[in-house]
Image 1 (cartoon, rainbow, N blue to C red):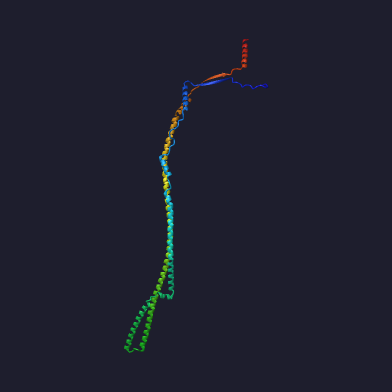
Image 2 (spheres, rainbow, N blue to C red):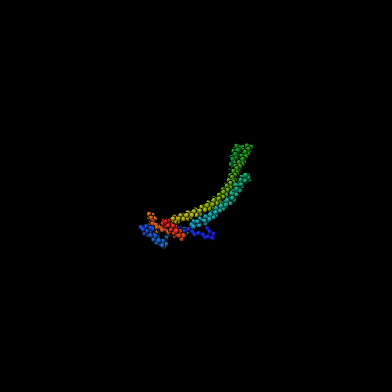
Length: 355
């Protein structure tokens, strides 16, 4: 390359071949028909679906929803709380009253028991005090003894008179023998009177002692009765308190039962509404299936022509059609130097042939 020279021009292709593919004449109408129909389908405007696609809530579902939205707290819940509180307070009050009655009974029985104990102690002391026995002796005991003594004196007097009459008949009246008999009779009478007095006093003492023992027994029995009264009163108070506590427990249990019934009723109502909602949902699900099927049918009907075009196109592509082709070759015209060189070479060859 010389200094200052420009870049050389790119090499030009010597020739160019253009191939044209031609359909066979028997297949041309079918392909043209397919193209025309496809072009017509492409110009078709969008066709909206006019029917509903989403199934709305059925009247049964709307009724269940209205009933569910209108559900309120069961009245048993509101009734259970104040009932339990009222019953509990009432039971506590009754227990307090019963305990008060028991305390009153115990308080009242304590003085009685104290009095009985004092009386029993007094009777026991009198039983051991010799002078106190006189208080229990019958005031009529001496009268009875005096009557017995008078009868004994009368009997002795009669007996003495008989002895005197016998002595007078015998002529010994006033003698030593009679005096000795009178002295013995007087001694026997005095002994008899003493025995009568002693027997009466002994009987009076025994009767008084029995009265003392009876009084002591009554005192002890009164003490025992008072103590039993204290125990019974205390027991009644405890039973009253237990009754109050049991009443409180029963009232609480009743309130819990009432609350449980309210909860069970509410759960039952909810289960009923859920079953109704499930049945209504089945109806809506069936309606949704119908709407989905209608929409699917619409899509198939709308796309049916294009499906047919695709079917037709697949058939045409499957035909054993050999497309004809025509090749045309275009050569690059020679340059001037080439033309001159070629002319020279041709002259030279012609010269050689002719020489």
